[in-house]
Image (tube, rainbow, N blue to C red; front, side, top):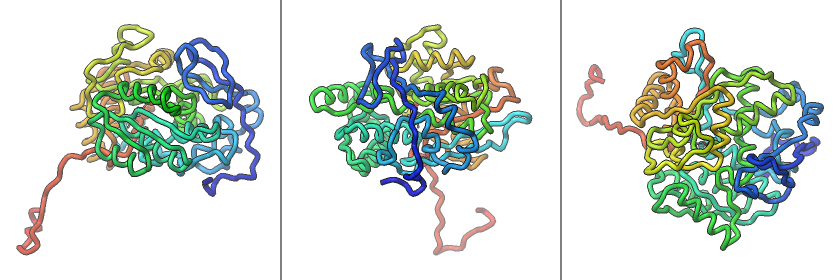
Length: 411
Ligand SMILES: *Cc1c(COP(=O)(O)O)cnc(C)c1O
């Protein structure tokens, strides 16, 4: 099905020229199915950006519906009929009310996307392309949200889906994956163990592997966070972006988006400092950043309440570290206690229920203010990647007995 707001009669020129290995630069043909490159690294989609520059204007863009498909010239899907949409709206930037004088703290609230997380951005692109290229069965390892998005979009596209998640994945995630039509299995291991099962199923069953960065299009979907952010800020970028980093798709995608926007003449050379936020119980990027490494060693015994960033090893580690370093940013870990305290503070003060991963960015921002890595005058963007309603909340159990007089003065 195609949403009403997509104009089918409008010409949809697409500008994809080829794919490119992110490590070696080797060229790969567009419009055929790909996973990793020959050397086992992620593939990046390349566009005729001169062509886009000649076609697309800011005014043209401003007149389009406010959803992710407004950036069609910079997206890989070539035909409208292949788009498998559930309504990927532009998400709001919500200022925190105690933003420090002179500065500004904006929360990009991604919890409002289909299936309640920003995984919808990447997965809608991957599934639309999989459909276009004839995939009938797909599989994925997940900590919860990616699997939910995959189940939803694949069911809608008529693609059969199998999902593997760690044993302690939040109950609500496992159930929503099942409810949305995928076969879902809890596995007694972590997400990279689940990834190995997908790899084996790819060999034995011919499943298409939709794992983070192991197919080229989830990055393109996540890239729209950077496109959207720049447009929402009047074709400018913030001073700092705090991004809760698991596989790093969003961080890598936004970095690519800013580069493409500069090449089509929409923004200048200014870049935000990119801060990769991890949990102290699983911080492979932080360790590699601090040790000056190009790649990150696997983090053993990974543990954190922020399940979306419990990723012990990431295939795009070098791309994350490169973007962080090139931007003049850093990688930082926050404790689960700080995550819980941040979640409670923003909910109580701002009326904004963050997910634990979003709360981790708030905790990292506060830590940055305290240690001087963030200036009070900075324009800061925090990513809240999922709705807080998907996670267990602190208990509340005050009751009233209406058969007895109520003491209103005590309420
Ligand atoms: C997947 C996920 C992340 C990590 O995103 P990446 O772009 O893969 O690093 C963070 N938070 C939540 C809630 C997630 O679902």
